[in-house]
Image (cartoon, rainbow, N blue to C red; front, top):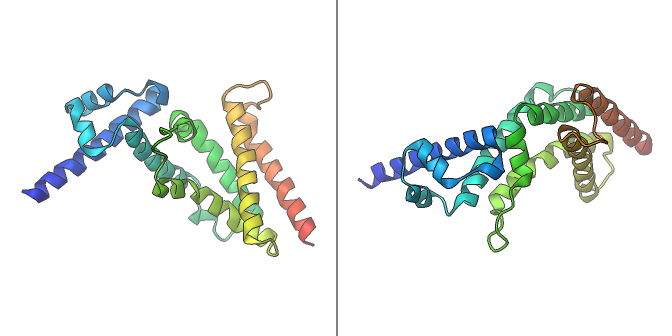
Length: 202
C-alpha cells in the first residue's frame, strides 16, 4: 500500500512539473498560477502542496528540467574532440539556439527569485554551475597555467558576456543585435577571446 502511495505521489509530481513547464513555455513565468497548474493535471489545489512546498518549489523543479534540456542542446559529446575554440563556439551557439527556441523557459532560469527566507537548494545551485564547468574545460586547454580559481572566474565572465548579448538582443534592446546575425557575432567574439588567451599564454 505504501509503495502504491509513493508511486502515485511521484506520478503527480511529474505531471505537475510537466504542466507547470507547459504553462511557463506558453505564458511565461509571471503568469504561472498554482490553480491553473492543478486544473491542468486534474487534481485539487491542495494536491500540489502534498509534493511541493509551494509554487516556488515547483518552479525550481521546472528549472531543473530546463537545465537538462539546455545541456542536451549544447551537444557536448559531439564536439568533445574538437579544438577548445570550436568547443567554446559550440557552447555559445547552443546557448543562443536554446534561448531562441525556448525563450520563456530560458527566461525562467534567471527571472525566478525564491523567497529570501528559503533560498534555492544547493542541489539546484550546482545544476546551474554545470555551464561554468563546461566553459572552464576548453579554457584550461587555452591557458593551462591559469589557476583553477582564475579559470572559474574567467568562465563566469565569458558566460556573463554571452548571456548578456543574447539577453539584450532577444529583449529587443536598442544596443542588442538582430537575432539572425547573433550566431556569427558570437562566433567572432569567441574567436577573439580564444586568440587573446592563446597569445597571452605564449
